[in-house]
Image (cartoon, rainbow, N blue to C red; front, side, top):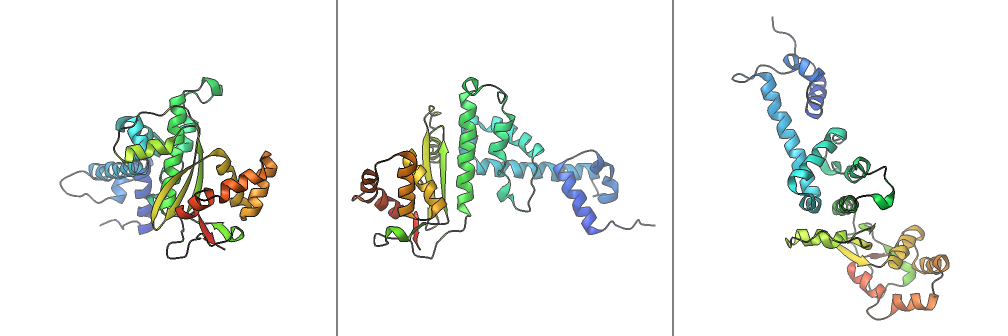
Length: 271
């Protein structure tokens, strides 16, 4: 007599676990879950799925972190990604979140994590920063944006300027954006020196841009994201950091200045 097949939900949960963590209990239930496929053994058939599954995950990781893959070399990157996936298997039905915890994993698993900051390996700092930048850039692709809606223009008063939804800020120990774009343009860039960098990332008309900014501009935009008002953010910036208000306002409003460049880049929507 043929044994009744297990419920579909039970089979799906088993298959998911067999792909995530091969061996052990999943292999012990192999005969119960998989009918003999004919010319090959059930274990061999499952192995095809397991290998294909991980190859797909590794391909996605390389696509989400192309510059980091270039910096580390494909084999070393694959080794890191494989260990990451073992510790942090996918949690979602979509692979969009696959690399979400990768920068944190690289930081937590670094061999010099317990050393004093001055004694840490600089190249590891760069890899962590580069991974964080690429992850932020990747998430910006699918952020809710303002495509099809009006952006602010030169006639929009300062009090009505609001940061658009598809906007993010990054601060790094290295010029990671420069390195990333060098890789994307197939220029084979060298690893950059230790040099702090700040960038604004914005998506306009479905195109994502990285805009280099200075540390004071980064602070201003961070305050603006908190308070939602350009005039108030300007006052707070000058008060917190002892800056000359007239000099800040001149830099903001002069022809070809910060305000004009950021409006052209699509930073703002009208309130």
